[in-house]
Image 1 (cartoon, one colour):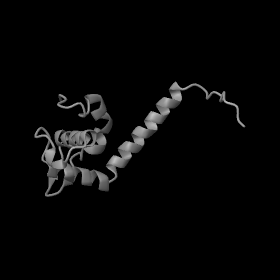
Image 2 (image 1 turned 90 degrees about the vertical axis):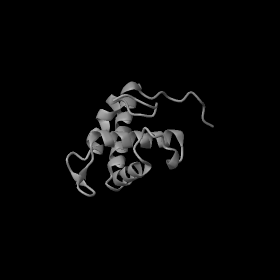
Image 3 (image 1 turned 60 degrees about the horizontal axis):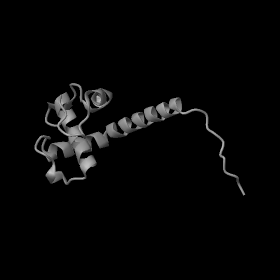
Length: 112
């Protein structure tokens, strides 16, 4: 899937979150099933809103309708999906930082 905006997830980034965001065959509202493409489009729209700070009404036409994106945000918030993604990515970043940093150096400033 091509990127329309800089805020859109890359294929590599999508692989990290897709299992959390896609309702793999699980029915949701009115018996519908969220497809991977629609979940990715909603996630990209949310990232666009966060990155640009634009109003919901100004969401570009390339994204799903704002009501669809808003519903996805509510669902992912209620069921803890966004919290799980955030916690996992925070943990992974901290592990990467620990691996790249050497031992802490002592401060060179004198204490009074």
